[in-house]
Length: 436
Ligand code: PYC
Image 1 (cartoon, protein in one colour):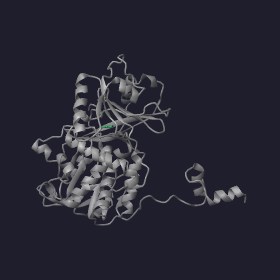
Image 2 (cartoon, rainbow, N blue to C red; image 1 turned 45 degrees about the horizontal axis):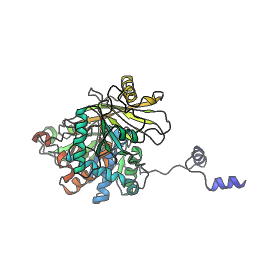
Image 3 (spheres, rainbow, N blue to C red; image 1 turned 60 degrees about the vertical axis):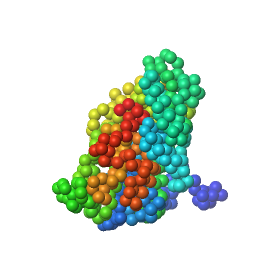
Image 4 (cartoon, rainbow, N blue to C red; image 1 turned 180 degrees about the horizontal axis):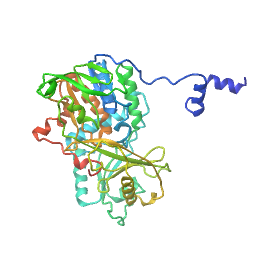
């Protein structure tokens, strides 16, 4: 055996195609990142939904409160829903004081996530520009900037010259159909690698004893004492969940699903004010870096950022028709591309490589629904519209606290389901990335 062969045998390269082949040749396999355990018949808490919200809730239950006898049930695979389909944007430049405080905590948790979870989540605070093309949207940007500043969040309104410095590829002249009049500039905004967030939470939760069960679909929620059929509905309490793998008894069920949030809640006899719409996004071929910040235009219904690989990832508003279908449409890509080119005519020859779609649960006020419900032991972390990914860490942290203390944490008080009865809505429509 030559010296080189001996060296390779001792230290095969770890990440190349050759390394994979080498491992296969030697009969080795990559270690599992989380365990594959039997489904037990009883848990202290069951989390429905193996996306970033469900995994974060389970992680913080174990880490912050020592509640480790927890199962996360996922009907497909971890991260198969919105967690793996979003455009990875984070920001806290919201319009309402409740929204700003909540999303700011999420940005903080994202900023220490690589260390907390020991995984490179590629957290990149590259700045976030929300463009204004009319006097009324400029007024909303000023409003948001002032609310942000009052909460200690770094946002300000800047003019076309400063915008050009932050994002030189934008056409800031007066030629476009909708000239750029100004922007809300939010330096803490940016992007995070969404898959790494899923894997990081799953691995860390697994290490603390939480179980993740994929291919495990919840078919019913078992309740007793409620005013509806089968003991479901207000006044009742949860005693377990029925799955395609058998029944589980548990005193606590947290609904962390997106797309299926209202269907799962209906299984406990709770109606949610949610309609579900598809949201499409697309990605181009990779090119050299030309867009250093995240750019959003509400009037043109576009948000975009460039990945570290050089692709432009971009999306628009939700599809107007409520449906559970996740099919893409040519109409979407054509309109989106047209709007992007109004902002950046210089990239007209870039090719779109792929598009995809996910499901968004829209509430009437564009804010989530979090916390307790009229069914004892049944909690919700739902209604995440197009803003779920950016809220995952804070949602997990706060939902875990609600479960552990049996009290609603201050940061999520405003998002209670009861607001739709009391009429105290949290109107975040002006802070949605795009007009919906
Ligand atoms: O609210 O920032 C946002 C957003 C980005 C993509 C979809 N919504």
